[in-house]
Length: 480
Ligand code: NAD
Image (cartoon, rainbow, N blue to C red; front, side):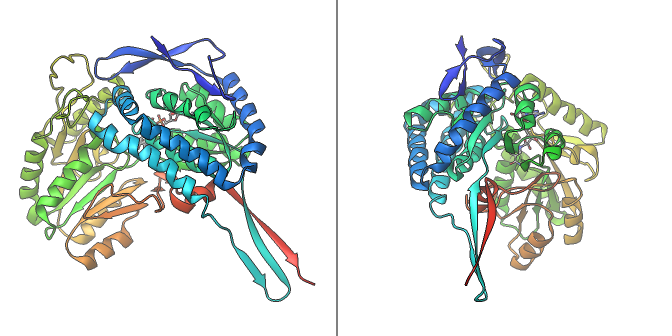
């Protein structure tokens, strides 16, 4: 069985404990590879390597670092088929999605920041005729980059690319549920000519390897994407050490549909927003609020469109939803379906485990549509992170806004309306970091990305990410 290894100081190495965790294929429920069960000893080695590499890597001209990063992106593009198949097998996402979204985006992330660092600039200020001030933005040292399982290589590269481009050296930990593409990627560091130790990848559980990265005194900052509960723990660990923190956390995103929307497109985009990647995207529109006049028609069309989605083998071209990532996660999602019924909801579609030919033990679940709930019940307040969506009517714009803003989350929101003034009003008043009008997951990597309230702290993307991985220093020169 294939054993994944850590990348530390340019070498692929076994974990200090000698122990491995099981890596399960969610389509079959079977263990298919082994993951290093790393602990603080592996993290200490990785941090030592990253510290040693820091003067070399940060001392290289930005163009040189960019050339290495671009070479890594070339290698992703060269191997995209292998990487897409690995991502699909590891996570359960469809091969179609891995091939068109995850893997192309991974190389795009790297190219974007390789280019960005060559255009990154800082300010200078003349203070009358007395002095000149300028700002140095220098990488701060060793960055800890911790990523989740839902978009494995996509989010892994979204963190390490700006960190490395800025000149930080990295100790990264991918999710223990989906480590395979980060492992395949780890071989590119040497092939692309990256100095040993600039990128270190330590695999293992969050409570052991992840916690050790956050606790390590020589890791100056943490870029984390994952659940809000984990984010809170990381913030509590890091705060007394005053580490720099970027936290991209959970969401419970509203999708608001006004009666004046372009109906066909709205239904199609709303289904996409609900069920892409089995609903396992932090940005999924999981609470749909529909203006009362359109409610019945919308629910009927949404259910019909959902019924066309095919749950099946993620490797098949015709599959729209693969299995959920783990048995435990499916159980959690099913728990929310049961809760929705207890809270008075009605299942308008789905809710069961489908039979998938040849894959009787996969963690499959039907896309599920629930109606009849209030906006403040637990089902509508807590993140489910699976193929479950609720639909509720609203009467007025003010009511839609109240419902949209009623959770502790504030990551993304979608508004469907052909009324431009209303679109601007809603965009200004919804409390979330991203507002999509008449679209969903339409991304420009230059835009700030992140959440308000308990959806996170800080922003990624564009200059925001390069600013995060650098520290500003003011130099003031008194003129004679
Ligand atoms: P998670 O919080 O369980 O794990 C994320 C990562 O943190 C994993 O690598 C895990 O091993 C590690 N980890 C766990 N405990 C840790 C600790 N104490 N110290 C350090 N690291 C630790 O999240 P998940 O289940 O992998 O991902 C799903 C969650 O991620 C959802 O809540 C989703 O909304 C969120 N998410 C947010 C964004 C965003 O950009 N805001 C994007 C994707 C996913």
